[in-house]
Length: 203
Image 1 (cartoon, rainbow, N blue to C red):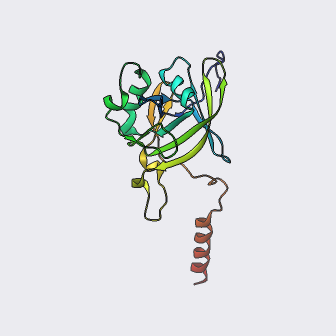
Image 2 (tube, one colour; image 1 turned 120 degrees about the vertical axis):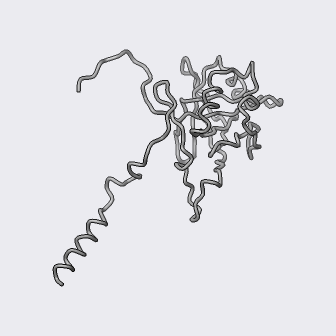
Image 3 (spheres, rainbow, N blue to C red; image 1 turned 120 degrees about the horizontal axis):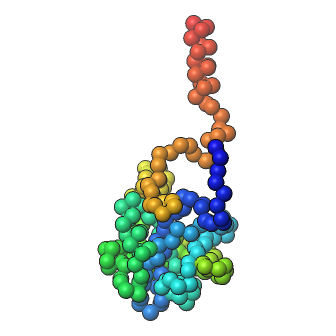
């Protein structure tokens, strides 16, 4: 199918819609919704978030060098949007959205209790790229909600009904189409069925 050519822009979707909790270290906490967040390294574990310098949370992150990335779910969709369009200069987002502050282990910024996963981060480098500045950060700890642990102690994150952001819309994650590496896994079922068919023919 033919494609139109547009001017350069950001069309890499969908993206995780995360709520980033921050503090100024003086008792004032805030939440900023970020769609431009990502994994940048496995070892050491590192992540990044990109924030406009004009945002209220920007100076908090720059001052303390800490933040918490909180994954969002379908249930948190309204709060996720609210925390992205309202400024912490005007409202207490924790209070307005009835979100629970939980103490983090290594950073002073609070975690959001309703999030299935909270990731403690410490800023390692700030890259001033243009409209947004990127905070490259080390992951200090990951906190996972126990309700998504199965009987085998495996974390079933996808059961949390995670939220993603795509071209201006919040969307629920869909059904599982495959798992990592499924395209090259051996078809065990087919082999087993073939063996059964051979046995039946011998009988």
